[in-house]
Image (cartoon, rainbow, N blue to C red; front, side, top):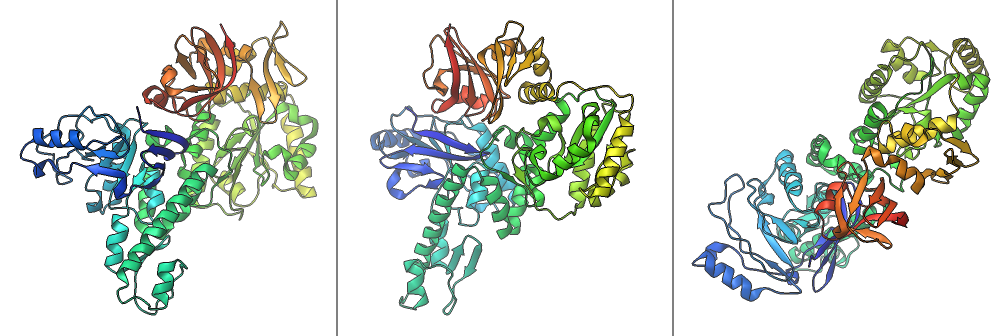
Length: 579
């Protein structure tokens, strides 16, 4: 039996459940009553004696922490302790820098982290260890958590903490809040209204240290509860970008972690219910932003067009529903069927019109100032250059203004600039420039067909759209084949493929989850997965293949996680047929 299960994911941050005598929702605090520990092997005369003592104390409702070998952080442990096959929930203390064969455990405790002061070393210990552990196991960072660093710890892969540092700091006269720590002194105006702080404010205690410790622990527990709600709301990265401003080392840690692109991308969902808020420089480094740009450049196949029209973004999403883009459309008029529209925006850089309903293009928000800083400019022209390498356009019209127009001009892109904006003069200039540019240009296919093809490529890889739509046509709100079979339907959430459409994608051998000889009911659980495409991420549409069933569903965990997990929902089934 496994005692830890991941319930929700928001990037590397996870909401989980550790089932002991009390059910702990993670990220959470492990209390002394939650575990029993054999301690160091050096407290016994022999390893055999340590193992025997652990067997006798093992519990079915408390975490049994296996005997461990204490060792300095940058020194390999002098000996190893054999794995133990015990029933009940198990904890194992492991060395973060010298990986050995890991014992089976439900919770892995990283020893000695409190000694690390350098953010780079701490991230190596946390994220590096998380990569080596089973995905359905929990990670604990002892003697390290504070209200102001908890979010960064959770984003780095930590599921459990303790209150040791909070209690020790309290007895050293250190007062903690979400915004940082300071030395307590009489007369200090306290922002907290907890019972401990009320006593401190009234100077009712002869010894303030126990009250400081109680306050600190309460603030840590409050922050963890807040983080759990933020994971449920799928807003963790937004909270983290705000929280790291509390200390320079936290900002440094986030910037360093963002360089671990593989670690973050393989844990980041492809869709979220929440709006992506890009409010800081770190937002440019988000896994969702980099993934979107990468898919535009590698999966999306630009429509064969002679004329490219560059447009600014809009506050309302999708862009085509905004007031400004409706004005643009009216000004362009009939020429719209002869040109390809691409929107330039921060932080996503380049958004083809056909992909404006893809996440996060359809659901993001940024501070609107009209100013583009150097990092935003560099990212925009980097992606735009790569996009233009296809060389299919003979002319470019740029309806841009302000610093966005300045950025494109200074980069040397040869285009007709129409001034941008929705004023009468600008819209007339847009009309005239596009009418002249499309003279003799090729007419583009039906925009709905272009949209379905682009979204299918974006979701399943380049070529998937052509495979799905071969000899297909639009009829009403459906994409149908020659025999009238429905391949995809238009829904409030966009175009959704049917089982018939999914069967067309089978030869591509991508985004598939293999199961055994059974028919799943409701949801597909991880133990029922025989194999999964490693590029699957939470939120992806996947094809379920088995000897007795074929279906479509929404991934709830990454493909690599499906294969390695023993608990949890792997796929939420949308359509299924028995074979």
